[in-house]
Image (cartoon, rainbow, N blue to C red; front, side, top):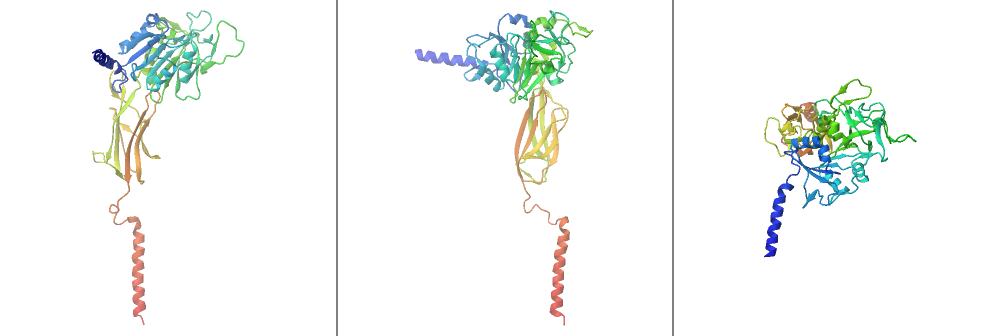
Length: 439
């Protein structure tokens, strides 16, 4: 009887857990997601409330936990409980529960998103996570970004560590279509990009006059990080389309920085509100797939003038190709419009490469002639554009040669050979007649 009750309880527990496990990433609704937010101190919930409320208003379910919570886990029964992870715990030396460096990296490798914010208290653990993602924080634990030319006039405290940064990446996919007019307030540590990692991008760069050093001591040697090589905010889109954002300033997300006025040194213009809120909000939309997320559906091909997809083509057939591409707008799928989508007709190498035309409603199409080569080909669409998820579509199709009864009966180009053959036969007949009957 006790064993029976235990079985019933187990089944009920798993049944109740299934709705939670089903909240994983959905291609049909990419932004309907659950985020785990790890904090050093729960008081950050109030000091960063504007940012968190922005996520909630966009439909995200936030689960706040301390980074050293002994019950921490990203997955259960082989299924991930969350679709994104926010690490606002720069000083944590060791995660609680089942969470560690390997678990975070596996989370990203499984296609989930990650947002990391550090500061001058950043631990080796947080720096290790960033390093694995292709970003290296300054090794000097006391160093901050200093800029004596592009500092914020208000609240500099004399050390010029409050930076007014406005060197943004030029990408509507990453930062939205509305230009960020006001500089972004940044106070934190510098990082550089690993040259071997081609997937990392600078979204917000330091000015050429910036450098990383301890603001409370004199420089005894040239700083290791200087000028535009310093990245303030970087992003990575992995090959599995997982997205990562890394910054060295937790204060950049704070209510205080969101509401602060800003005036860049040397500029007469003062903004009543910094660009932090717009910058962070727009970039978080990209990180959590509310923008720049593409899907391709209904890849079709058929012979010209027909509608059914054939089992194979013959060399020199005329064919039509089409595919539909849509972009997630945060609420629904909208037609994606671009003029650089191409299709390859591929066997070992592309025999045909065509740019697709579009009807402004998401349908991309083209027509071409099958090359005079038979074998097993692929229709291949490879699309990689800054700020957008990559698309890789392929469909295999065999191509056969002409059958013996499909060739032309008489080939125009062979008429001279036909004439030479008949002329030779006629000459042989005349020669034979003359030889046999001439006396």
